[in-house]
Amino acid sequence: MITNEVKKIAHGIKTMEIRGAGKIARAAALAMKIAAENSKAKNAEDFLAEMEKASNFIESTRPSAVSLPNALRYVMRGARKAEGGVDEIREGIVSRADEFIKSSEEAVKKIGEIGANRISDGDTVMTHCNSQSALSVIKTAFKQGKKIQVYLTEARPFYQGHISAREILKAGIPTTMFVDSAVRHLIRDVDKVVVGADSVAANGAVVNKIGTSQIALAAHEARVPFFVAAETYKFHPGTLVGRLVEIEERDPKEVADPKNFPGIKIRNPSFDVTPAEYVDLIITERGIIPPSAAYAIISDLFGWEFGEKT
Ligand code: RUB
Image (tube, rainbow, N blue to C red; front, top):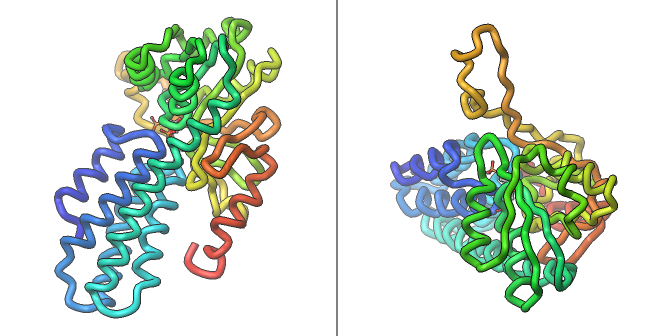
């Protein structure tokens, strides 16, 4: 049932109070759990129809992070696999939602441990936007005693860089922030770049916060290793059958009020695509992979999808 609490979560994702692909996915799983627990459906068919409706409603909030539909499908699979009536299906949904939330939190931690092995003492690490997985790598390396510093962008127009700055400073890591357009100028001071991902395509291309592909380009030119920290639920099954990741365009007012520029058209793409050739490696909870292994991850993890509902 789409309760007020479910609506609140969906609204939170849409307005970016809840943001970042991992947090969005966990919030979606929680919303499904709440929807299942509050359903008044009397039979399995009605219950499943209600859950499908809730899932579609939550999925419609933001289009670029595949972690959202992947989390919803993971939870809904619990319902489809359950045998019996409403109670059994409800239990299937609730347990899969709990399982997703727990394992996705563990994945972020694991990515930190694995990724930290690629950070050296004395490194200056650049990051962009606010990615829990990328920050997990940075914070874990620092906790291991590596004397690192962080360079980070503001991430205009939404300034998620400010969120990262506060988080990194709280961890006690020396931090320098600059405008997004300073990346090419400052990349010469950087040893490694670590960013997160909203979606990873079968060809190894990475969708992440707008500006990521420019950083990758600058890093490539300056021979600075470019790492992507991404849980496997950020890999996009649809890309295996030729679907494209939709790039969200947000309200132009986040950039500037069009009223102040009569006649202007303002665009606000929120994500961009970094081609695989600019990505040195992807740090997943299953280990470090080259972007060319994205196909194998997707077919291994999501192969079942193509025999079922995609
Ligand atoms: C957030 C963003 C993050 C990824 C990964 O964009 O691009 O880099 O979502 O984050 P937005 P995480 O602020 O528009 O949601 O590693 O936390 O899942």
